[in-house]
Length: 187
Image (cartoon, rainbow, N blue to C red):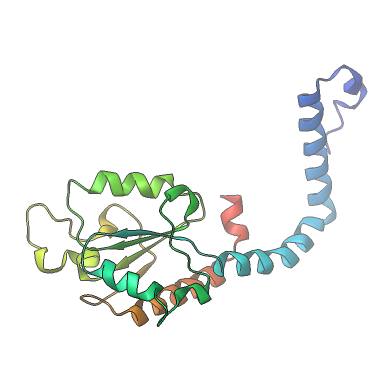
């Protein structure tokens, strides 16, 4: 514990005092093992909350967007899984890419990915997003979104059914459960 600033506490500014006291408390928590106990208790709760309140950014370009919309309808009702589609990247934690991505669209999609807060995940839905689809050998279509964005879950199909999209989100739930949320907070 660094108590070197202790005698000068009266001459500190408020900002210096807060920084000093935070450092002392962090050292104290780490030295006594309280941090490990708190992480042991709070990590599963935080992980459960993140898994069950996903906000995917709907980025529909082609026919897969219709299946995504059908997934939100009353028949499949993805809201029961905690999936609420949002339009702002700053409020989302899952980027759901469906449809072909052209080279002209790639910088905008990368910018949307970078605007999303951490932790964030990416789902590539459909053959076009995974490998370019029928336009895989075209001069202007990217050969899969994983060339410029790290993809966590792939949902194959042309177009994939709403059940496949729900299954993809459940696979993402399992991936998040295995990783632990404490890892994301430290990065």
